Amino acid sequence: MFGNLSNQLTNIGKTLSGRGAITEKNITEAMVDVRNALLEADVGFEVVKNFIGDVSKKAQGQQVIGSLSPSEAFIGIVRDELVELMGTGSTEISISSQPPAVILMAGLQGVGKTTTAAKLGYYLKSKKNKKVGVVSCDIYRPAAIEQLKIIAKQAGLEVVSVEGASSAEDRARQALEIARREFLEVLIVDTAGRTSVDNAMMKELSQIHNMINPIESLFVVDSMMGQDAVVSASEFGKAVPLTGIILSKTDGDARAGSALSALKITGAPIKFMGTGEKPDDLEVFHPERIASRILGMGDVLSLIEEVEDKVDKEKAKKLAKKVQRGKGFGLEDFKEQLMQLENLGGMEGVLSKMPGMAQNQAITSKINNAVDVVAITAMIDSMTSKEKTFPSVIKASRKRRIASGSGRSIQELNRLLKQFSQMQKMMKKMSGKGGMQKMMGMLGKLQ
Image 1 (cartoon, helix red, strand yellow):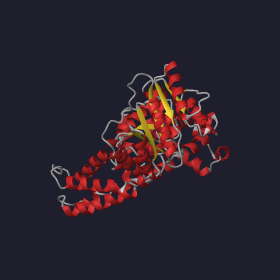
Image 2 (cartoon, rainbow, N blue to C red):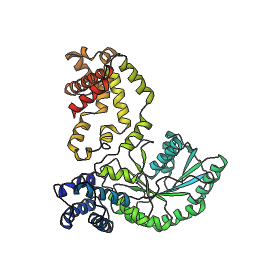
Image 3 (cartoon, rainbow, N blue to C red):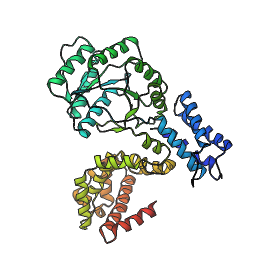
Image 4 (spheres, rainbow, N blue to C red):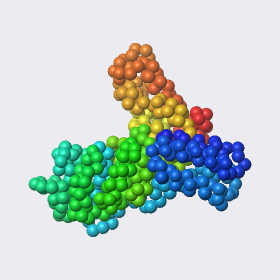
């Protein structure tokens, strides 16, 4: 998300590099790049205009002091204003009410609202330890009700089954009664979407809102929608008092600037962003972290949290003990480490949160392309137990068999074996005396 914006904003410091001080002239030059970057990212004109004005005033004011260089000071101001633009309010979802706490999901058809409802339920169940139920009030598309049932069960959520409801409002009312009887702590109500905003839709949404009195009314925005997101946000904001925004599909090549405009229009903070298709692919939106990520400063805090949540600690401990005892690092271990990495969003997901990597797109792309987890898994799974443990026995005839069985080429297999050999050497160095220092030395050479 914000990929193009990040690429352009990380270069703004070049405009001021080598300058002895920030002046009105070089600020004007830098702001042209900032303005163009924001407009190309689909941020609304009025929002950009205000943003540019605020940055310019602060850049020429008392904030630019100390030992920082002009470019560092300027980027710091841009970061602070990005945080302000993305919302400084609390992103914590409110569930502190008499159970069940009701959450209303709103948005246009096709924005990923139903999938997001299940992800939110999974987040509340796994992170907040809540008993969560979901219900669909889309009486126009039976497939939508069935879809929510399927993905909710996959996420381990309670599906509130309503029978015989004649309207969406009646369906919501019955679901709330059932949730109370079954002692659910949270009820997520998924509403009907439309391909475009219409009066009937807004009236129905308003009626459901009045009936269930939700503690949270969340508007789901497709991060790839462009300025249509701003228009729909305005209309939904008039129909119900929105308390937050969830960005969906942020794992795509989205400009996503329209979401910032939607935030300004509704006044509701961005609370979450969807980063994939799995139930746990929903991240809390931290404006300060996203601002740092956009400007190439990294997001190490989010990376640490993901490692804590998604890495299998027991498997990691077993591997560490195995390496320390000098029992070797086999191809099956190599595959397991790659699968753990995939849970963190793959190499690209990890590198995107590392400081400085936004300015090294070529390096990131090269590393990401070199680590094809699907291909590597297929090749390792096509090997015998002996080949996985002792890769040195893999010669010409074995290579042909493995390549044929996995549907990959011999060149790809050779590359895998080379990558594994390098990883194996690193693991051997770690197992010896002063292993960590040796490994850091190897990483330094690799960099």
